Length: 84
Image 1 (tube, rainbow, N blue to C red):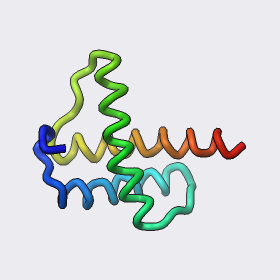
Image 2: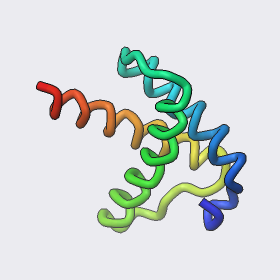
Image 3: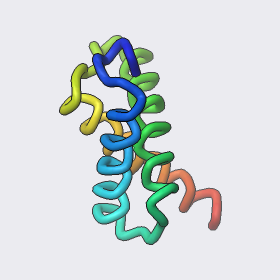
Image 4: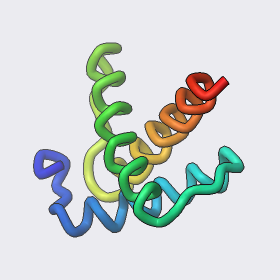
């Protein structure tokens, strides 16, 4: 997170927004804490996937929000697959 130019407090805020956006986009129902976790962990997962594909990860606030959103959507979809 620090390498992306985002501090811990900002990561929590941006992660919460990214998780909330993913929650609305994926039509899911989770709490505020889970939104924050999904946004932060989702950004980590999305950056990992981008690095495997040899794509330069996005940086800064907007990049972290986008990767957090995409990663959170991936995690929600995986969670749905596991529950079935």
